[in-house]
Image (cartoon, rainbow, N blue to C red):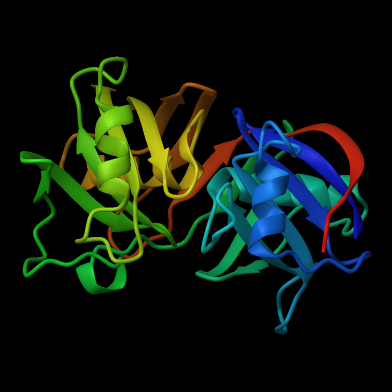
Length: 278
């Protein structure tokens, strides 16, 4: 199967984006993992598939595959690339589109300066809906990680996140704790592990070990989850600039039962085609 694709990134969080509207595409887990492989494939943190909408009132369907080939619910940086791709490829002429994902409807919008704002929806703290195994709804939860107790805030931004506060992201145990938190038995669907350093009320630094991909240069939903956790804990005030290793995002949130708004860049790198083995 030969497919055309576009390589894109949002703050270094990179994607292979595939138009499944104008070409037939049905990826297997193995094919998605091959595309993401940086040695034998194209190389990407995630594979994004643009499909026709399956319900009224939306423009497209958005599917996301991690580097290991697993399909996931949401990707914030990918959502920004999604709308940029749809415009650049003339799939739409709208500056704002409605897109269905596994976790619900999102609405990315191109701003006048070229950046993209995405309504990421209302964050979820209820443990059963994250999902997170806990007998408490406490905002700060203890988590045993290889015999060490870590204090986390569990939240879903359409996908599960465990956010912990660290003194310095440069020395945070991302490589050691990240994989253990990702597959912790209290997170039955696995989890994205966020390590947040508060600089001041409107600025944080962040690293995220992503479920199925490892540490990435930036994580859009991770940035949203970190800001939501920080505001809920009284550490931050909206809007918040999130400094990642790939660049900055701006996250705004007005509190419980309101959606999180994420703004940042989306960049096309190159277009090509590749033949995949069936």
